[in-house]
Amino acid sequence: MEGIYVLLGTNMGEREENLQQALQLLAQNNIQILKLSSIYETAAWGKTDQQPFLNQVIEVSTTFNPSQLLQALLGVEAKLGRVRKEKWGERLIDLDILYYNDLIINSPHLQIPHTGIVDRRFTLVPLKEIAPDFIHPVHLKTQTTLLSLCKDELPVKRLK
Image (cartoon, rainbow, N blue to C red; front, side, top):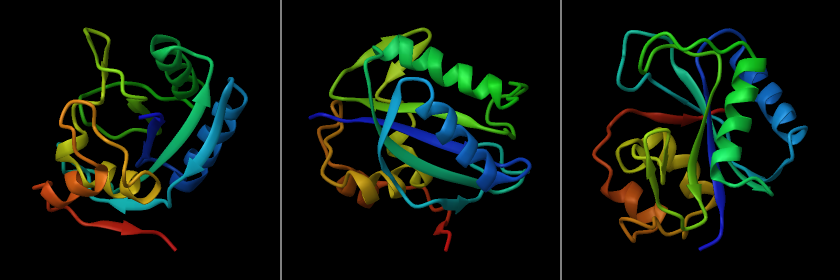
C-alpha cells in the first residue's frame, strides 16, 4: 500500500492556529500535503489531567526517506516552540509519522508504523476518514477494521 500519514496534535495556546502554522511549515519543507482529515477534539490520552487536544491526520508526499521526514517534523515542532518536558504531557504541537507506505521500521529513534495507532481513537478516527482501506502492515487490517476493534473509549468529536 502507498501512503505516508502524519498525525498533528496540539493542546496549548491557539490550537487551530498551531495546526495551520504546522501545515504551512510542512509545505515549506519539501512535504506536499495531499489529503487532510477534519480536525477532531479529544480528551488527553495517557496523561489525562490536561486540556483537550485538537488532532488531524494528513497524507503527504515527500522525497524524504523516513529518517529525513522525522527530522523535518522535529524541525517544524522546534520552529513552533515545542519543548519536550514529559511523556504524554501538554504540547504546543506534536507531529508523528503514522505510516510510511507499507514500511516496518523498529529502531531506537523511529518506529513505523507508529506503535500507538491501534490503541487510540484520536488517531484512528481521522485516519479512517482519509484512508479507510489503508492496511496496517503489521496487523494486516484496514483503518476501518482497526477502529471497530479499538478499545479506547475516549470521545473524538469533529470540529465544525
